[in-house]
Length: 278
Image 1 (cartoon, helix red, strand yellow):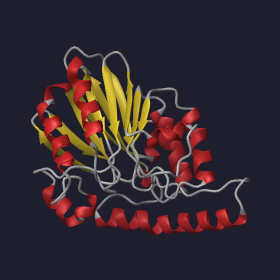
Image 2: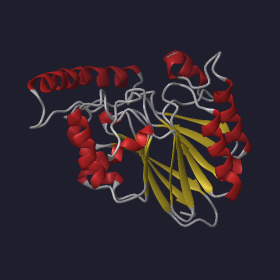
Image 3: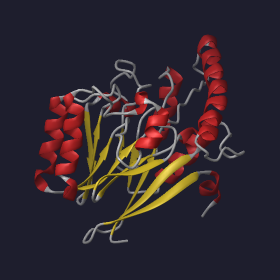
């Protein structure tokens, strides 16, 4: 383990899939960057400084609430942590960013994220988070893929499909694309921002509150249909990835399919998966 990895909270997972060569996939999100640069106006800089200061306390609050580490490495400048996350992710074969990469989507935040995405030479998806609100990300940027209702990134053996469920809903069109993607039986990683409540995580999710649930009581029927599609295509799904919670949460959706919710990237949390025969 190098010095950069020692500064992060990397959780390792092995997903054994016979006949598939070894793939490494990194998952992180909820980095909530609030930055400024030489092009920022005084007002933009002031707002970013305030937002950054607020997240110093907020990241500690979430960590303390859920019993996760919050030492000197986790309380560093959040842009240093972001750089470390991207450095490690750049060594993987695929990257899934699970939303809320920015806190308010300012021009400086976009410039900072574009700079890092330019250096990422592997396939990636970026789930739209509830902080990447509709209409706030201009088109023509690498980061503007968050505006797509469905994203796909793949190689010859493994596919990532990312759905925008940031407003705790999905459309029939999104479900149709997902359902059709399983026709070729390619192993798939399903990615979105807001996670499911499962039998294995219900107690923790009830403590967190319905704001963090995708299949909340009274949710649209499409939300439950997404869960049904995942269950019906379990043999073609490697795993499901989500964020939003700000605490680590791994639970079984159905036999053979786990949902991995990464904790807050603003403290340096990352899931790293080895997928395939090892």
